[in-house]
Length: 76
Image (cartoon, rainbow, N blue to C red; front, side, top):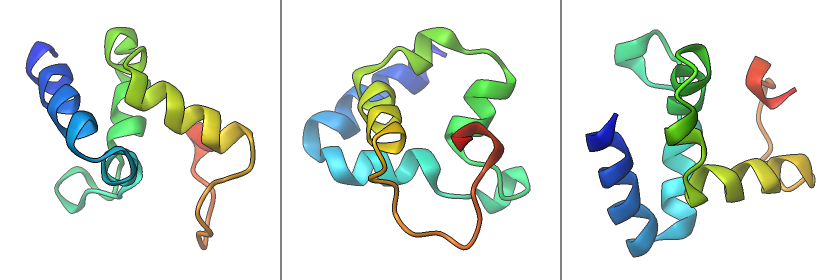
C-alpha cells in the first residue's frame, strides 16, 4: 500500500490528467479491473484518500467522466 501511494504521489505531481486516466484504465493483468476498482474491493481507504483519487472522484460526480461504452460499478 505504501508503495502504491508513493507512486501515485509521483505520477500525480508530474501529470494530473494522466494519473487520473491510469486510475480508471482497465488492467488486463487483473481481468480488466481498474486500480479504482481494486482499491474499492480491498477497502484501501488510505489510497482512496489521495488527492489524485479524490479529484478524479470529484470529476466523476460532477459529470466530467470521459465517454465510455460502459459505466463501472464504482462509478455509480
